[in-house]
Every structure is written in C-alpha cells, then in structure tokens.
Image (cartoon, rainbow, N blue to C red; front, side, top):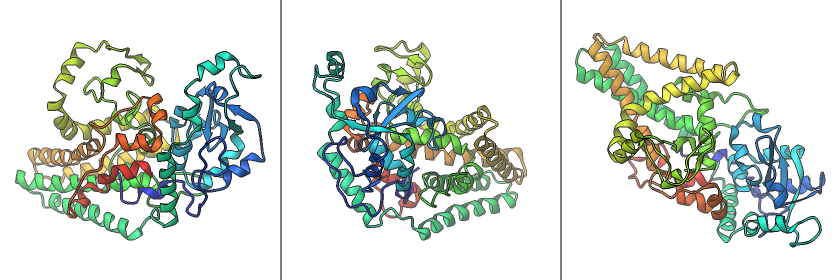
Amino acid sequence: MCGGNYFASTSTNRRGDTSSTGSAASSATALDGSKGSKGDSSSKDVDVTYTELRRHSTPQDCWIHIDGHVYDVTTWGSRHPGGSIIFKFGGADASDQFAAFHRSHVRRRLLQFRVGRLVQEEPKGSAGNTDADADADAGNVPAMLEISEATEEYRSLRRKLWDEGYFKADPTFYARRHLVWLSLFIAAMSVAMRHPSSLAVAAFGGFLLGLAWQQVAFIGHDAGHYGVTEPTKGGGLNWLSWFTTSVMFGISTSMWNEEHSMHHAITLRPREDPQFDYLPIWLISTKELDVGDKAKSNLLPGGARLSLLSRLLISVQHFTFLPLCVFIGRFNLHIISVVYALKRLPSVASVMDLVGMAIYFAMEYAFVVQLPTTATRVVFALAANWVAGILHVQLMLSHLATETFTEEEERAEGWAEFQLRTSRNIECKWYENWFHGGLEYQIEHHLF
C-alpha cells in the first residue's frame, strides 16, 4: 500500500552533498551524505575483517556493517522499532537498507554499538588470516566492500532528491486523501441508516464502505512508514498509523510493522518475505522449493516433498488467485491480526492493537445492525469486505511474476538492482491514481 509521500520516511540527510567513495570500508561519508561516520571513528578504531564480521550472524551474536563501520546490535535487536528484520543482516552489509528505513538523526545513536571499522581482508597466508579463512571467503569479500556503479548512481540520485525537497510530505495531499475515505464512509453510513430492504441498495452501501476501507488503508500504510507525520522524540505509539490501520482498517498495526519492514528489506526472498509466503496454497517461484523455511524450521530441499494437497492447490493457483484474494483475504487478515496480538500480550503494542480492532469491529457491527433483515445484513457485510479485498490484488500486482532472489543473490546483486528487479509500477490514467493510492509507483516506493 504505497502512498504518494512515503519517501518522507527515509533517513537520508537533506543537506548531504558529499559523494561516497568506491569502497564501503574506506568511506567516511554516510550514505545520506552526513558526517556521522567520521564521528564514530573517534570512539573505536578496531579493525574488523569481513571474515570476522561474518562470524557474528545470529540473533544471539549480531554484528552489522553500515558505511564502513561495524556495529554490535545483539542486545538492541529485540527492541528494534522495525522488528526482527535487523537480525536478517547479521554478519552482512546493511548500508543502503539503513539509509532507506531511518531518519538521518538515528545515525548518531549508532555510536554506542560501534565495534570498529570494516577493513579489506588481509592477504592469504599473512598474520591473523589463515589459508582456511581466505579460502572460505574467496569471491565474497569484493561483493561486501566494493560499490557498483549502479549503487553509486542510486545513492547520488537519493541525495539529489533530498536536496531538492522531494521527500517532504505535502499536508494538502493527505488532507484530500482523508476527505476521500471519510466521504465514502459517511455515504455508506447514510445508506445503512436508511434501513434499506432492497438487496441492491444494501450491496451499494457495502460497496461504499469497502472503498472507504481500501482508501484509508493507503493512508495507514504511509503513516506506518512515517511518511505523513514526523516521528515523536524518543519513539512511542504512532497514533495516526494506529488510528488508520487498527481502528479504521481493522488489523494489527504491530503485525503490519513487523511484516512490512521485512518485506521491504528482503522483498520476495523465498520463504522469508512474510507478505509473499503463500505455500502450500500458491507457489511464487521454484526457488521456494530449494530453500529452508527458517521461520518455521521446515526445510524444503531441492525437489521438496510437497503434500498431495499442496501439489493440487499449486496446480490450480491461476484459478484460485483472484477468488481467495477478494473473497477470503480480508477475513484471513482479521484472524491473523487478532492471533498475532493475543500471542504478544501483555505488551503495550498488542493491547493497543486489540483496542483498535475492537473499535473497528464495533463500528462494523453498528453499520450492519441498521439493516432491517438478515439477508440485507449479510449482503452489506460481504459486499464491504469483498470490495476491500481488491486491495490484496493490488498489493500482489506490484511484485508477482517478477524476479526472486535468495539471500546470497540479493547481496551479490546490490540493493538498488535487487529492488528494481523485484518490483513493478502500474501504468494508470490520471483519473485512476486515486484508486491505487500511490501503489502504482512501487519501484520508487521500494527504492526510496
């Protein structure tokens, strides 16, 4: 659910004007053009090789590389506002991802986690680097330390866009977006309160409510990315995101934050992108049969042993895709949101999720009981949820039937190239943009 001004959620420094060098290890300038990395150097100057970095790649021992510096985020990871995605980059480079998902001032907070600076691997056979170490990392170190021309150009473009103010949210844009969903919501309420006995009128009222839900979801998406308002100092609840996502759309805000952060960082990674992991119902890529499902500890070796039911479902997925998205997707999202929040009680985020969703279901019930008969109530409710279910189709169009990359392939490809190959834009006429809520610009959304 990409919105028109998602880009305000990125961390790049609007005034940065210094280009990064061709080596991440030697760069003293952050990807956002800030000078935060130079300040880090005054704290610790321990040299960390790529071999050493890779040894710290688990949630229990997690080091990450950002702009030539290495940070130990083991203890911080469980409190990371973006969720567990931080552990996916243990023992690896997260420079472009950090710049894409954080405000520039967050960089100052990295100092407390700094281990040292990332340096080129010592020559094979030299002191401190055994033949086994060098052999194990042969061919991998350049991918870690060298910056491709495409990445350099991408970073330069990002700095230019910040300098020119393209990432500043436009309040009038979101005022109009709020007016759209609120008008649809009031119109649906007006239809319901007329107590229509006609099934057609009841369906029309449900149609309006479904459109209102779909439109408010786009704002909820942008708000969750902090693309509408600035984050509060010291963190805390994102009230606009909670209101639009849990109260008005009826899903868990914290679940969305966890899964959507993962989706943006490892888009379409087989069995690891939680928003595009549909086995055993659908198969997105044959690569899903060659990797392990780390989240479920369910290894799927090459030529995976899929159940007979799964093989049957996959064989007809081109027929089941639309019906399941539209008719089932909305109800499934409610169920998994409630389960997610209940499992994480008594955390404040889960409590707020449940309170927000309770308000949502109370409002939906208040709509439905206005209808005079069981038939009109069922038609109204189904029409609303099925129209909102179109949103699931919109979400998938931006990524399905694109390329997929494993973890190793992602890092070899580079952040910018990887995102370009896993996302697609949708061509729209000027009068169609409102319906897509910015989702049609998915490539820009994922890059910036």
